[in-house]
Length: 248
Image (tube, rainbow, N blue to C red; front, top):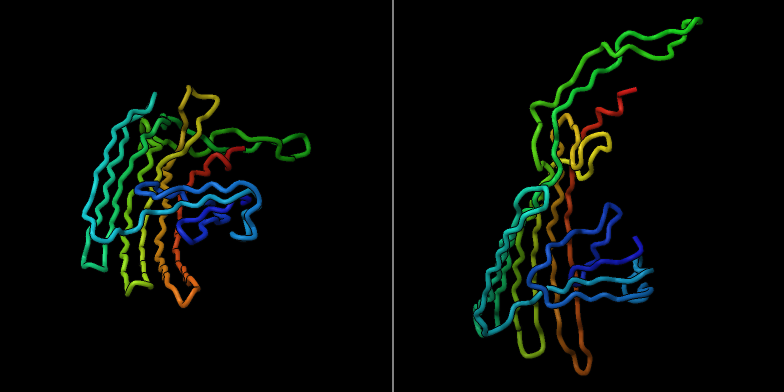
């Protein structure tokens, strides 16, 4: 990757693909063009993008809920439900939480089809195999036929505390979890009608992450001190249909 991505103070640029963070209740998004290696290290040769979340606010009780319903052309229905709340716990402690659910509608149809594999070989005059008769076993995808089967669901939440230890020192622990589940494939087959494919098994993909972060800010004499640390766990897995690779 040549562009660095940050979630608050933690880099989330990975070889397996940058995290697709659900953007809600953000303070700002910073887009820094040009080489940023001096400040943001590796993978920032072409720039850096930072997602800065809203932090808890002391002495304020506030919240909001947002919803959306949408329809994809030639596809299904989707929508989003999001909410946040900020609560004062004490005069020096505040809590902020975010929750979200999003469904992106599918638009690819998995249509009925069969595939018959090679059976009897075809030999040339020297008994070399030059082809085959397709009279081997046949597979059928009737049990996985489905319209708009490539839907995507994303859900999760974020929680944070702001703790003022005194007039100079503040501690902010944060935890965020996001789970993304996709089904089907996001391409079509040229030999079929538009937005149609023939797949012979379910193809789920899961991508989730959990981030735990801690920021400590304070002042010693005339010096401002900041500590930022974070840990992220990101398991991913998926299943793909490779039945076409055995067809010769």
